[in-house]
Length: 319
Image (cartoon, rainbow, N blue to C red; front, side, top):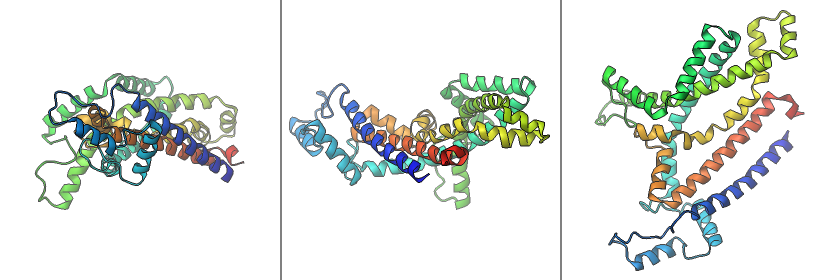
């Protein structure tokens, strides 16, 4: 088991190194140069451009720019070109904003998808199965931004409460309990919106996987022994159907960045996805490269978590 974990860590470190190189090269293959100046902007002079190039090592060869960038990143010296603030500090602040949105949405998705999918597989072809299939495809087909606006209009007109941003404006002198409840309320709507599509897709996967293992010999043997249906489905069938979902669970970590761009933009939530989108528009290369690197770390961390969960779910790996 330790050799399996050790090999996994070494492979992911090597992968992260090559991903950092590829992402750095792709950014620099974009049209234009980082120091390219708008000729209509009178604030920039050739002297300022040259000082800018030297300050950020843009006058060096590409491989030296790579070394300097990641050296400054790991030592906390990399700053944003847009506002000259520390990149790591900005990402950490946005990460803390995106984390509760991600955690609540993930909990809602995974706690509801499995009961819905398993029950649909048990009552295959019945009214419940047809109803969940219809609503799943409906939620998958509706664009997220359209459904978000419908939900916002309904909540605002029905309950007359604010839903935009992380907190209600003007609550500075309110009690701590009211501040907490206000933050929870602002967190609830985007989390539910982010979970709807995930529930629709994941419940379909759970249903199909349960139907696939239902015809296996060990399930028929469990039924032949006279075990209750709940034990047959939840102890024997579900455990053997979990392997694909272990992989999916490990790959949800990048949702901290990429999966929340639309939701954060609609609800004016200052998270990582929105920051990455604004950095792309502003061509803020340090932010873009750092977000790419963090995304790669999240993907590899997620796959490592999947490897550890495989040890729990599949005894063959432990052997």
